[in-house]
Image 1 (cartoon, protein in one colour):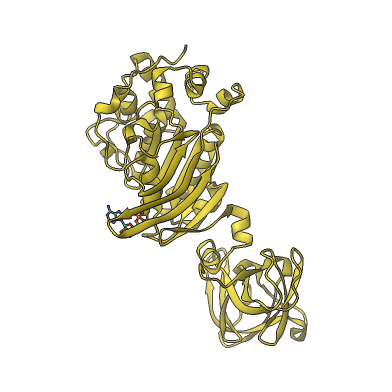
Image 2 (cartoon, rainbow, N blue to C red):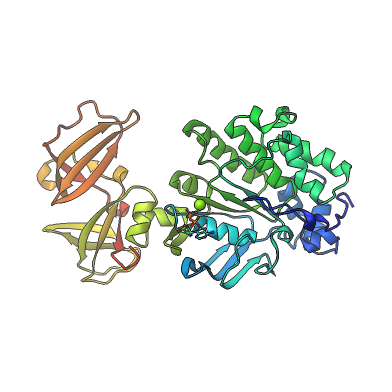
Length: 418
Ligand SMILES: Nc1ncnc2c1ncn2[C@@H]1O[C@H](COP(=O)(O)OP(=O)(O)O)[C@@H](O)[C@H]1O
Ligand SMILES: [Mg+2]
C-alpha cells in the first residue's frame, strides 16, 4: 500500500471560514478497501489520478448531485429547489449575478450550510447530514484564505497534517502539489511574500493535497487583475487535463471563465437554476432571455414565428421584415418570441442595401483595439455589431445595411424566467 491509511482524527480541527479542513472520507480514511481507498493506493504517490482511474474499472471519480435542494435563512429562501448533477470528472460552472445563490450552493456541498429540504450526494454517498470535515472536499475561495503565519509548503501540508498523514506522505505530496501549480520555487515563502495569483495557486495546491473527491472553487480568480486571470484560467484548464477525473464545481460571475473551463454551465437567478446545458448549446441556443443576456452579449429582437419548422429554419417577422432563424426550442407558429443574434454574428451588408434583411441607424462606434463595436437602432430596438477593426468605420447617424446567417440566429422564448 503506497498511501498509508490515515486515522480520522481531523474532526478536532475547526472548520475554517470558507475553507473546510480537509479530512478523509470514512472509506478512504479508514482504509476500508472501499472504492476510493483502493484508488488512492493504486496512485503511485503523484496526483496523476487520471491514470489511477484508468487502472480502476470502477472509476475513481465522484460526481455531485443536488436533489431538490432548498436553503433558507429564516423566511428568506436563497436556494430554491436546486436540482443539478455534476458528472464525475466534469467541470460545471455556476454563473449568475451577485446574490443569486452561487456561494450558498457551494457551501451546501461543503457542508457549511444545511439544506432545509433536499439531498446532496457526493458519488453514491448522501452527505446532506455529514459534517464538513468528513466530506473529502477541496475548496478555494476568492480572497486567498491562506494561513498568514505559515509558509506556502506548510499551508499545503495543513490538510495532510490534520489527517495525521505520515511524514513520508507529506514529503512526497507537498512538493508534488506545489509543482502542479508552478509554485515549487516558492515553498518557503509566506503568503505576504507572494502575489495574489501566487497565493491563489498555493490555495489550489492546498485544496488538492488531500486528494479531494471534488474541488469547489468560489470565484477563485475574481480578485486577480485581468492578465493574471487569463493565465490562471489557462492553468486551471491544464490542471484539469492533468487531473481528468477531478470533479469541479466552479462558481463565477465571469462568463469567459465559465465558457473557457466548463463542460456544463448552470445559470442562477434569485436562488433558482434558470438554465443548464453544455457551454456550447447554452450559448448557441439560450433557453430564455436571462440566459441569453447573461452568457455572452445578445441582440434580442421581438419577433413572431410564422411557420413552425422544428429543428430547421423558421420564418419569423420582425415588424415588417421577414427573417429566418433556427427554432431549436421548437416554438410553435404564432409565438411571440425573441430572435437572438450574437453581436459578432451580425455583419455589415456589402451588397445592394435593398437586399439586406435588416437596416439600422448607427448610434455609436467604438474602436476597442482588436475590434470595432457598433451600436445601432433597428426598428426602435438597440442592436450591437462587433467586427474586426474597420479601415473606414461608419459615422453615427449613418444608415447601415445588415445581414446574418440564419443558422446563427436562434429563437428564444420570451417566458417568465426571462
Ligand atoms: N448567512 C446568511 N444569512 C442571511 N442571508 C444570507 C447569508 N448568506 C447569504 N445570504 C443571502 O443569500 C443570498 C445568496 O447569497 P450568495 O449565495 O452568497 O450569492 P452569490 O454567491 O451568488 O453572490 C443573498 O441574498 C445573501 O444576502
Ligand atoms: Mg458568491
